[in-house]
Image (cartoon, rainbow, N blue to C red):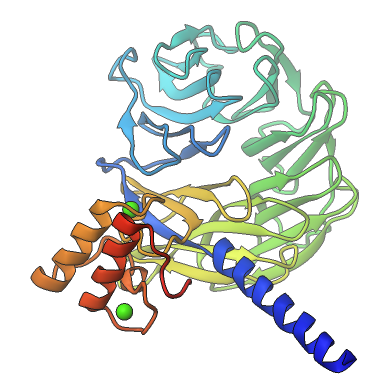
Length: 403
Ligand SMILES: [Ca+2]
Ligand SMILES: [Ca+2]
């Protein structure tokens, strides 16, 4: 019976694809860092080890579920604005000016101890603000400061070599190298016309990449390349626009534009089609907005994060896991939903049962959306769900349905 067979194959295929969707479904939620700092930087060398900076440095070793301040050996009068890690041990922290000297530190033990580095510019009127940094491994990095110079190190920041970028008074917002040779510097030159520079020789020489913009004072807010060819720009130009290149920046095309959308702050793509943007929107107060594109930046779907406040930076580990930081001590985490995991720590344990009991008997709110506790999937939350949860935890019985 060929027809029945094909129906069977289609049905099994459908079920398998539904199963796949169910187990790859992720959602954003806000993790309280226990602080109120204005976070300006996030670094995620792998899916468990994370650092964020915004005055202080916070660290997580469990994928962003819990956080602690990691600031022990730094003087308290220094404000760290950027943190960057090449792996789970080797990282850099860059601070704002202190006595006309930009402050930088290096760690090689995951941030337990920090050693102060000599900075590329010395004391005096030439001292500049550090704006962005890009490290490709534990030794090689580039540092962009206000002005017209990019500094390169090959020894983890012990020594820095200056290179003129060719445009005087350039205000950098972001720098990214994808290997030891190819990198982009985004911002705005003081000619008001030059938002993007490119180097193919490790930062020694820089050339202007044209966006064919009619508007002056258009600047690069953020940029992200996934390899030497494919990259995206978040531009402030007549509102905000996304630009995309597939040839290393020789040609740029505007893929998305909006005059009155959310205020976009940062973007991160994980492959040629999937990307996320962090930003904020006034919604009776500023709330964080995370926008996702599945079509290379042509269209975006916005997710408003309740209680979020003005997301500033975003880092995606892959299409299911990512993080963003906001302006009020909030850390946003994107992770797969686990049925019954009402406290969102990725595990179904007794804690979840206790939270479920509190919900039913004390009417306390869940720390996460209520449907997370609806483990028998009847769209209601009741004692039946607790019974299923208890069976799952103590008898290892499967839930009657999945997400
Ligand atoms: Ca849990
Ligand atoms: Ca239910």
